[in-house]
Image (cartoon, rainbow, N blue to C red; front, side, top):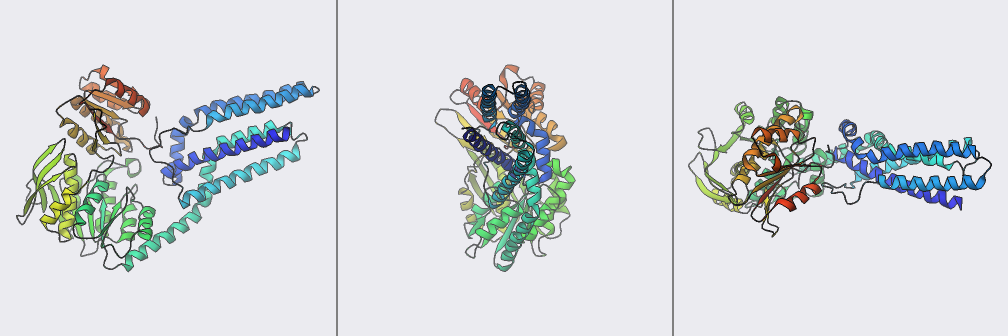
Amino acid sequence: MNILIILFLVLIWIYLIIERSKFFLHMIQLEGYKEEQYRKWLQESNKVYSETLIKNSIFIFIMTILFFVVSIFFNNKDKLKLFLWILYNLLWIICMIPTLNPKDKDIKKPLVFTNRAKRLYTTNLILNFFIILIVYILYTKLISDVLFNFPLILFLGTALYYFQSETMFLSNVIIKPLENNINMRFFQQAQEKIKSMEDLYVVGITGSFGKTSTKFVTGTILSERYRVLNTPESYNTPMGLSMVINNQLNDKYQVFIAEMGARNIGDIKELAKLTRPRIGVITSVGPTHLETFKNLDNIMKTKYELIEELPTDGIAIFNYDNEHIKKLADKTFKEKILYGIGNNEQLDIYAEEVEVSEMGSTFTIKDKKGNSIRCTTKLLGKHNIYNILAGVSVAIAMGLNFQEIKKGIEKIKPIPHRLNIINPGTGVIIIDDAFNSNPIGAKAALEVLSQFKEGRKIIVTPGMVELGTREEEANRELGVNIGKVCDFAILIGEKRTVPIYEGLMETGYNEDNIFMVNDLEEATKIIQRIARPKDVILFENDLPDNYNE
């Protein structure tokens, strides 16, 4: 009977280890399997995710000491000792089950069991097995009454369960040489494939923001004449691009559009050497990922790596209205196309007579040769006109005429979670801009919200992240801008959103119309209470799963 109880407890422990290790596998995956970033996340966030486990582990520690003290005191009373043994095991189960991560937690970007994730997960389980095996061998060698003293094993197993964050870190270190080798071969395979496709036209797109939207806009326009392959979603890393090249790119495609993301100096250069673009587009330069870049100069330098890697006959395309990009464009002597809004003699492609409404935008596109065409798009916001102008510039560079470009623009569809309107049929309009947020994008979203003439305006936001030392200032400015547009503000994260609150109060905002909540579930309850037909709700940003208070 006792052996069956022990086997049952062991199975429960194995299940707990498996589930908790999945959680930390998910977190390290979100951090790009980079030890430094994962370690930083652990320092900032692990205590939040482990509050219940910490309390219960302390209780188990006290319970273990009491068990052995009381057992020694009642050494000659076997029935009482058996009762204490069973009670301890039962209490252990009761303490451990609540420490599992809830299954109904709203995951924004779920764990993906890629081959790399499977290898890391397996390595972690093997590491756990060896640790517990060593503990068991020592236990059986040193302890006489193995069954009765099993609570000691449970306590040590609890400690190992608690430190899954560390075993995952160690597993990642152990397997890193193998992963580097696999990644290098995968990268080189993709690189060789690109080199062998001599007729393939590669377009590289980078920028602090707007690059994903620009990629899809450009692909839609170019599809009027060419067979185009876009990198899906936000695939913009060496391994993400390599996977697309190796698995999807083939001879039927004439154009490959590669989105290029970066967190560190040299990242864009690596991607450019992989894809060998003939056209390079820089959509924007702004204060994103400042935690790794440190300053705007490093961001500018990194984005410009795309232009530096273009061939001598390559074409560089710049958003000339961006003050930082203007500096980069002015020092470029390769063939270039400059785009912007307004009749600027220096611009090659520009938009005039812009009319922005809650239903989309209408504008006239012109070039230096005097060609012009009136266009309409369902995309919301002035910033999306810039994304379209970037796509138009690529299309001009690849020989499309204005009629083809107009048809392409009309086919552009709103991109999910990037300022697209949702009508749930309740009379309340929702603007979903939850994918990401940055100072320019948030301002553009509020401009779109201000276009709605009927109903009250409600914003739901956790603010902006990854802005380094400028994060507090940017969120305070966001609060000021919200105060000028919105009737109600629902702020997610009572600590993180303090700067937004302060910005709101600077505008003399009605404090009764500010709601500070802990999560989206609480925000939803408030919306259900205050929203009424014709109101417009803007969801601005949705923090990734590895961010918290």
